[in-house]
Image (tube, rainbow, N blue to C red; front, side, top):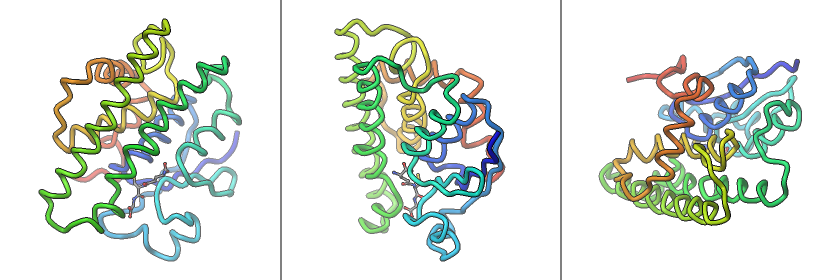
Length: 215
Ligand SMILES: N[C@@H](CCC(=O)N[C@@H](CS)C(=O)NCC(=O)O)C(=O)O
């Protein structure tokens, strides 16, 4: 088994995705916190391991990798059981589109790098993040409805097995709640996130259970 070291921040939704993946695959890892509130992500020593200056960054046997999608795909290839993507090409692509709605279309808008540039007023920052979280969840909900029309059924984001789509949805739902998004227009996404959150893997990954969590 590889030695896994995760540079992470408890409230980082992208780190949450990777912790969730590691837990689904029952992979033990060492967790090293990078305090984003204190700007530790901007230090040279962090940039040396994470060229983007972001978390998460996962070291696998001493080799660093950034970007949660790439990290999760690598873990899925190194440790295929249980799989995080379906085998069928269309189902796989459907899961990837759910992943990208969050990864590319939602989370980047709430990132500190964006909101720090936008405004210092906390209320304005919160309203901005709330807007883009709601917009992203609306897309996710509509995609789930489309998949339903194609016959996809089950308690999770795509069918009855946890997939990468759940690993992205659960942390985004956590962010949406933090930003005070009204979740009532997104019943499919809410139900899927609740089902995924009830799993042991998600419970192990939740922000408040991480060693660096603070009030
Ligand atoms: N696309 C990247 C996003 C990583 C990212 O945005 N990380 C945030 C925390 S969730 C971060 O480190 N932000 C620090 C900053 O903006 O300064 C991924 O999926 O890993």
